[in-house]
Amino acid sequence: MKSWGDAVKSNDLEKAFEICHALKGAVGNVALDPLYKVISEMTELLRVKSAADYASMYENLIKIRKQFMEA
Image (tube, rainbow, N blue to C red):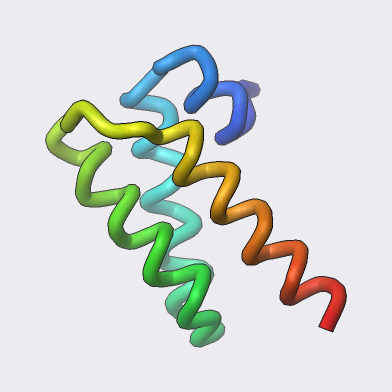
């Protein structure tokens, strides 16, 4: 199974959308607002296969997640 990071790095937008959309629901259910904001934006861009810097968005998300884990 391809991870979200792998999908983003390989420009597999369909797989990246599938994973991102699932995460959006999970993160929304637990009210992790900073993560939800980035994931929501990324989900909507992926939904329409918009040209975007998904790798940078993914890296930003990893930084936010790390901050939560260190808190």
